[in-house]
Amino acid sequence: MVEAQKLKEWNKKKKKLVEDLKTANDYLKIAQQVFNKFIRVRDAGLNCISCNKPCKKENAGHYYSQGGHSNVRFNEDNVHLQCEACNTYLSGNLLNYQVGIEKRIGAQRLMELQALAHETKKWSKDELKELIETYKKKIK
Image 1: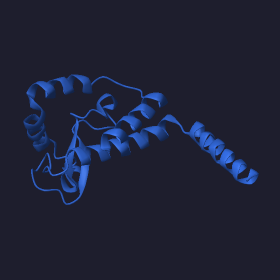
Image 2: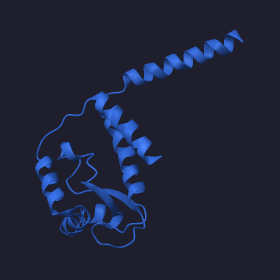
Image 3: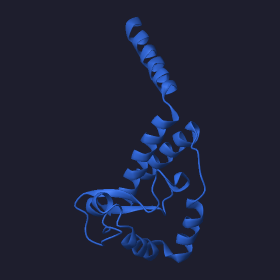
């Protein structure tokens, strides 16, 4: 019984140590995975935002790239279901994406997104942890 309690305490301590060692970049990767999954769940049943065809392989396609536009990386208006062909092989198929995104969110929200896209954002560990929890809940 004592051994089981010690093992339980060690596992709890080990989990905390592992969490403490994670960097903001580690959390950024996790947050992106969870957010992308949310987008695929949210847009389930919709066609590709760019080519308007059913998606064989579903991607969460960013209108403004996640690397160059950190402020809108996790903005739901910026990310929509996109097929692998448009997202990967056509570099986002952005001209058609623009037509699709305007139909989905409207011209006003697209203009607001454009204004936000050109601001820079440095994500903190705490912000990313909160974002991960928020989108895990939204997925459920």
